[in-house]
Length: 141
Image (cartoon, rainbow, N blue to C red):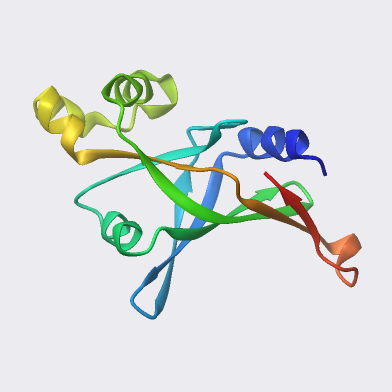
C-alpha cells in the first residue's frame, strides 16, 4: 500500500485502537478518527481521561485500524494541536454529535478540556492473512 492508499483506507474505517503506556503497563482503547491526510492523523480526547495523562507522560503511541482484510498499524509520536478554531470545527462536525457534554460548559472551559492530537511522520505496518508469512511491509507516512 502507498501512503495515500493508507490514508484513504483509515478515513473509510475511522474506528481504531490506540495503544499507550501507563508506566510500564500497556493500555489499549477504541477511538474514533477525525481525519487523516498529509498533515497527520487527527483524533481527540479530554483532559479528564487517563489517556490524556498517559500521552502527556509518554507521547509515543501505536494506532491499529482494521481495513477490510488488512490491519494497518501506525507508530509514532503524538503532538497536541492547540487551535481553538480547529477544536470548534471538530465539535461542530456531524460525526461528533456524541460530544453533547460540551453544551454543559462554557466555550472557554471546552477549549481547556478538549484536546486534539495528531500523529505526523509515523510508520505504517500493513498485515494481511495472505501475506502472513512474508516480511513486514512498512510505509513512511
